[in-house]
Structures are given as structure tokens and as C-alpha cells.
Amino acid sequence: MKIAWLFNTTAVSWTSFIPLLGVTNFALVNGAVLWVVSNTAQEIQVFGPGEEDGVPEEEEDPLPVEEEDPLPEEEEDPLPEEEEDPLPVAGIDCETQIGEGVPEFFSRYFRCVQIELDGDSVRITSDNLPPHPSFYYGEGHPLFEAFDTSRGAEYRANPNVIGGTGFVLRIPVAPVEAGITVDATTVNAATGDATDYPFGTAGAALNGVALFNPLARPGDDIEDEKFSFDSYEGHPQQTGNYHYHAVSPGPLEVLQSLGFTTSTVPGAADIELYGIMCDGTVVMGQVELDGAAVAAGLDLQGGHRHDLVDDDGVVLLTNRYHVHIAAEIGIEPRGLTPEAQFYQACVVS
Figure 1 (cartoon, rainbow, N blue to C red):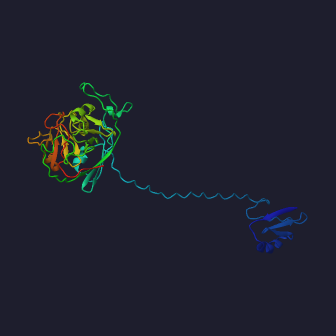
Figure 2: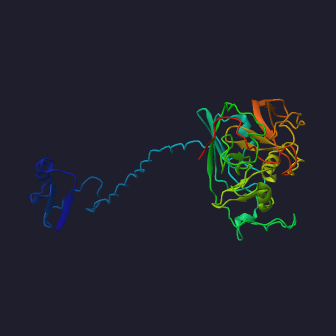
Figure 3: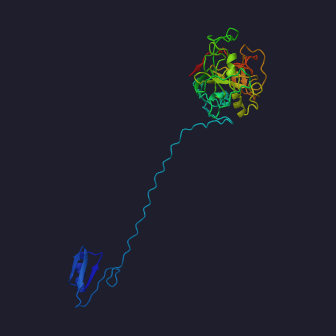
């Protein structure tokens, strides 16, 4: 007996066609036609399309269509807020950020600070960590150095340690005169005068170190206190606030790194700019900003007024009061930071 399957057909078409082939024994199974052809009768073989000898042609399973994974939509990374790259200072390990619109005097000479234009003020922010060696960093610190006693037997370190007491100065862009007279009544080395700069931080050096006024704490004399200055002419007070009262190689190292001077020895530099006081008074050395000699006629704290111009003749500050301090304390003009506050505002925090 032979059994055959017909595929891909329906009962409607085959029930009318199979009897014509002499096949009477057939049935529908699951929608296909199954029939039996007797061995005794004339053998009729009917095969489905493409079949031979009753063996259905193997149909290859259709290859699945490879569906490409949908490409994810490319999301653009949000653009980070643009930050100005820190300005490098050759040989000095510190970071500097200068904001938009800051007057050129500050952006050109100051480093190791963050400076921004804040309304009608220039805001200077500093961590007040000197970027140079000091005994007062303490042993084990990378910038520690031994206290230099070769300067004389009277030199001795104080017991304080640099504590990183930062500060913020707000210096007026256009300072207003306080209306004082700089004479023996206002420059007298006496504490407590209404015209004095405040105790503590009263200015900023070019390297971000605090500038103090020229007065020692009550009961002390600055001429004695100077013997505790380290090799950069600075020292910390009890809370760790490191500062300068006088000239220092530290700010001159900034000028050297920027190409303004080849020497960092106070009194021998091509340009001697040390910093600025909180009211806007500029602190300079024994030459003008363009390297010219200082004219006669200084007041008792080494000050006078005129345009501050660079060596290209560009006016950076107009008719600005500034003081010239000498290389050593006690040399005229005064070798100390100014005592009398020439302009009105002094905002320190």
C-alpha cells in the first residue's frame, strides 16, 4: 500500500479532482489530502508540485532576514561651560584664573589668584599659600626649607606655621581719595590711627600672598619683628596667616616668570612691582612700572601720583597713587608697606 500526501492544497480543489484519477479512498487531514492507492488496482501516483517518487522535495527553511539593530540616536554630549584655562607660571606651582573684563593691570601681573570683575570692584581671591619655599611650612612639607640664620645672630623663627588662611579683596576700579594728608601725623608708626590700613590682610602681592600694614602688633616693634622673616621676607601670625610687611623676592619671581625682569633681587629687578593694597594703592620698588627712575618729591611713605605706564607706553592705571619701598627696612624711602590709607574703600574678607 502506498500513502501519499498532498501539500499546499485545500479540500475544495482536490475533492473534485481526485475521483478523476480513480482514487476513491482519500481523506482530508489538517487541510491536506491523504489518499490510499490499492496495490491490486492500477497504481496511480499523484504528487504535489516539485515532488518525485512520492518523496516531497525538501524545502529549505527560508533564511531569516537579519534585522539590523536599530542604531541608537546619537545624543550630543552637553557642552561643558567654558572655563578659562589656568594661566601657567613658569617655575611656580599655583593656579591662576582671570575673569572676563578684568583690567589689564591685574590680568598682566597677578598670578596664583582668582580675579573677577565684580561691578565697580576687582575681586581677588587667594588661598594665601606662598608658592615658594618657607621655613614656616614645617618639616615634611615639599616647600619646607631651613631657617636662614646666616643673616645674623638676631634672626630667629617665630613658633607659628603657615595655615592657608585665604582671603578675598574687593578693590575699587576707580578709587576715591580719602582726603588725608600723608605726613608725620598719619605716618607715625603708631597703631590705632583712623587713617591706618587695618591689621591683618590689607592687600595682595603678585603671587597671592597677603600684604599687611607696616605695623607690628601692639607691644612689638616691626624693626624687631623683621628678624623672624624667612628668606622671602615673610612670616605667619598666630592663626597661620602668612604675609609680607616689606619687599620680597616672591612677587619678583612672578615678574621673572612672565619675562618682565631677569633679577628677583629687590632693588636690582628691571621692574619692581609687589602688589596692591585693598584701597587701590599700588606697591612698587625702586623703579617705576616702565623701569624708569623714580622722580623726586615722594611723601613720607614713599608715595606720589601719576599715570602708571608699561614699557610700551600703555597707560594701565590713570593718575594712581602708589608707593615705592626700598630693598631693606630702614632705607629711605621707607622699606615697608604703606601705613596711611590714601583711598576710601578697603573691603577684605
